[in-house]
Image (tube, rainbow, N blue to C red; front, side, top):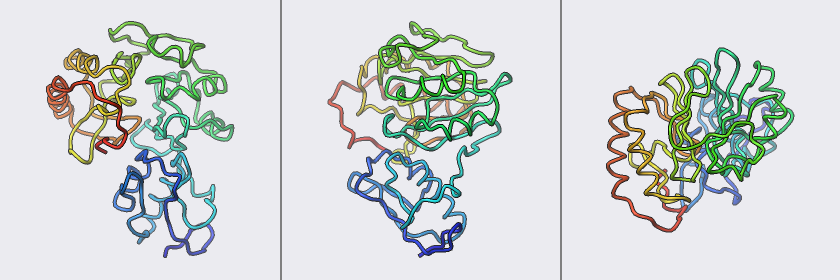
Length: 296
């Protein structure tokens, strides 16, 4: 049993049957939540305040509200936006309409960039507005487009998407085209990366942060950089070609995916692991989509 710091009432944490196995809770509460039989489960109750904070972060990020403290989830325990680095925020409040994807805010000299979006709510939009101007909402691909227009309109921002996924955001303000990198703001480059979807894009900032959508992620299972090869909607061959094009163009230290584990590593290590991934990806062949085979 653990104490809820806002109410003082003992609570028992658990995951209910609505869990979609999106991995969000396991990222935020490692050691407390694990995967079992295609969904998350609570391994044990928190032992101290730090672990309790991890579970509250996971609960407020969970797109289905499946992770619960044994009673109502108090808004006062919401830690988001959560700082990952100076000027880099994890937004939490993942949405069922984006398959539970992570989203981020990145501070730039002229304002914030939102990379993909949390669920839309006026209270959340006001919270982000209070941080300063949000100039652009950058969509990594169609699966994460559900709330893009709503946030762009509410925050007075430009909405970006690639032409390959334009039907998911046909009213986008800026449309990326082709496969060549494009500088969309000082120090920020969009790298079209067809594979997971036809219009997938990686956004690279200052050769430091790489926002990868559903293309690249860090796998706890393999202990390495991976692609979501078992949920490739468009073309695994195109994904391999995208990786080959990116080998000499992508230099970063922070890997920031929509799904899967985040990872910070030296730029040299990231480049080496990216090269190894490209080698492995060349041997992959098309296969049916299988969510259960994702190597979280």
